[in-house]
Image 1 (cartoon, helix red, strand yellow):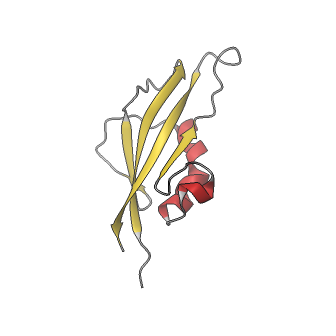
Image 2 (cartoon, rainbow, N blue to C red):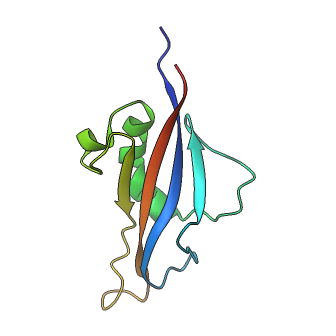
Length: 105
């Protein structure tokens, strides 16, 4: 029996302060299996991606967002980038929604 594969849509939900990447609500990129889908126009911030990685791998393997502690529903979770914003930095923080769908059993 093969493990299920998931596609995760990562969408900017909220921006607090100034985001150096220029994220705006509704910006999105996609991760499928273990790959960031190519030919996307949204920039992918390494700081934000690094804050997601410890959750993305089990989420992509079928562990629920509720079990991971990142959401109230199994297939939707939330992660925040690590920039605290003012008064600590000149930046700001971004809240991302991670929404997955099964693409193969």
